[in-house]
Length: 111
Image 1: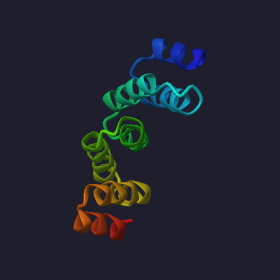
Image 2: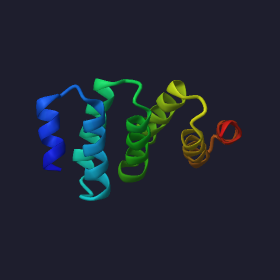
Image 3: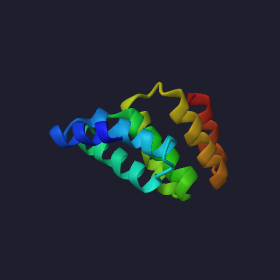
Image 4: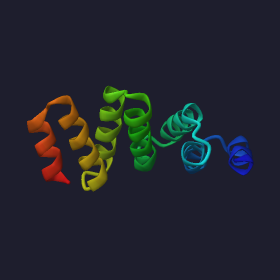
């Protein structure tokens, strides 16, 4: 963690360092607030960073229950990479949970 923070301090615009810090905080430290902030910083540095959008969407959906935020994040991934199977699949799960069967079916078919 210290190495990522040092790298970010030296180059705050490096999206991959923010993303890697977010993944570490989410998966190793279970620090969802820190992970969310790191993913958002990665996206601010590189709006097309699909991995940051995807992980943010998963965090918002599972840890926060923020389905609107998660949907927006998954859609951002799909906009940047229309062949991102996992984003289509997670969007389908989310839409199914919301009762949007047609939207879920479309997302599953796109996956």
